[in-house]
Amino acid sequence: MKVVRDYTGISNDVKARDSFISEIQAANKYFNEKPFPSNESDENAFIKCVDADSAKQYCPERWKAMQAWIKNTDKASKCIDSLSLISLISCCNYLSDTY
Image (cartoon, rainbow, N blue to C red):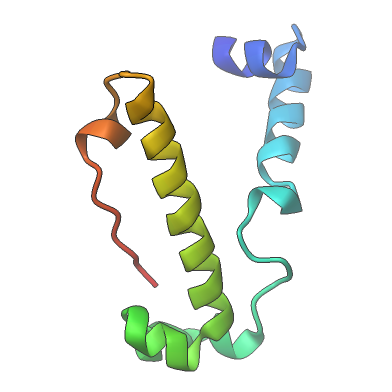
């Protein structure tokens, strides 16, 4: 909870937790601009969209969001590497997509 209190600046555990949950669930924390269409998030999508090629064809909104995530993560890892920090990201600099 210390990390949550430090992040939110709220000393009360319950209020800090609630604020933190709201923060990480905020729409601007996601890489899709709007909810995925139902055909990209139903049972069939998990069968049809199994890799980058099939996701690009059958789940284009999920594919675009994944590309944005990969670009953002790659940028963050390069930033961390440039600071000479040892981290999981800089040690394992291979990104893999899972649809």
